[in-house]
Image 1 (cartoon, rainbow, N blue to C red):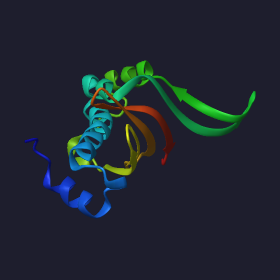
Image 2: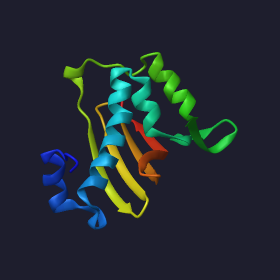
Image 3: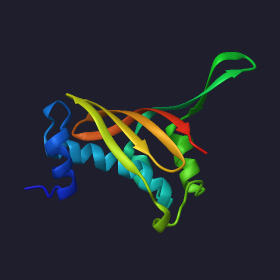
Image 4: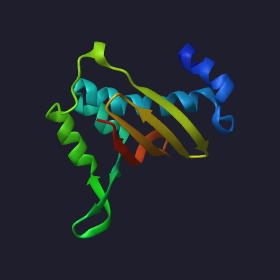
Length: 142
């Protein structure tokens, strides 16, 4: 039997998206934490394993010189490179992050990640039993 943290079981009892089972919710939560904790630790492997190879990470930046609906774009490789450089490395005592599973439908999920610095909205997909972030729309808070 797989160990599922009590905090996940308690949270899912009241707010289970679409009746998802606790193991699915725990796996989605683990992917979200690999993404954010990996960046905060500077752990390239954790970040890389949370991302689909065709990740589309974007921030809405508004009107730009040659683009009416400007997006700042980032690929999996760019995010992994930023992690390798320690761009978001933060002492553990300063970590303050929450992953909230908004919806799960079959092999697709929607998740909200919030830190003091940014908010990410993820679309995740389940590929052969592994949840990966396929799309991320993010907003810089500071």
